Image (cartoon, rainbow, N blue to C red; front, side, top):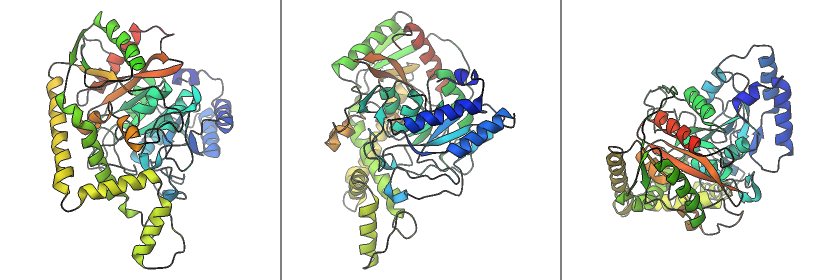
Length: 455
């Protein structure tokens, strides 16, 4: 549902009530916490014209690793099952300032570690197009909620594709902004140097508006660059680079190549290869897991996190709490990250991964010396069947097209370009630093090449 469609409703209160009933009856499992009473109160305030701002009266879903004052924030983990934050994240403050209705906290992979939401303590999020398939991860709840009209807008987080993956699988728009454009204050971290909060919506204009609201200066976040964002519609003769290093299954590539062929009629299109991308996946997982092992060390059952009455020494207590509070995938990444940072292996793995990251960044910079945007399939396959990915390595390989963007800190959009076997396929559009306007304007031109039935 678009903002314009929501605004056309006669009563915000009645429309919100209907949406809450839809969520209550839904089979998708998109939400962990639904803010029913607060949402209805805000809708009533909007009716009385007491809510003002760019998003006044618009329902927005917030991923459950973004802190919300007095609303449970779990990271989809038993470790934070009853965590009630005493402050709002910067992006939530901005939503409230602009009159948005926070309709609930969405389901996700535990601590954002996954590609399918199957690692969630609260169960998998189902795909709105096929309930036997996953919605993608880790922001699967946010994407499914937008796609199924269980919200109008949503916030997700993207560490290695966690906005773009579910956006592709659910047939919506999802943007990973330039690193530093959106404040990370109040985001419960997975990997600090990689992750960004970003918008998810059912159309480009709504996505741009949400980005306008959440981007901007925040002195509480040292990684924030202090830039604001304003969407400006413009046309240019785009130079498009097709990334040969980012492939996909035959059926996804067929749909992708159809779009590329249509773009050739209007723009300069050339294939480009970035040699360093073949090392991106290995580099990403070493860096991400290393940062995760450090970030999650605070959850010991004493200072933070799940706790219970246990006997024994502090070491025994600490080990038992973490064994019971974390899921299997989180524990796997903590172990691998701790190993990569350990004495004797730090230089062999972590430092080498940082050097590869630098090479990837330089390769992207060279490419943007020639091209305005780079494109690829967002995901290498159609949405997986629930339970299909039994091997962790296979799950990690699914991120092959998305992780290079996070390593370089670039902005990237996933947009729907059609269906294969009734399932959505996404196009990834990568831009240069702080060129979100270029990406969004190019996406509008891509839409023009596709008829409405294809999209």
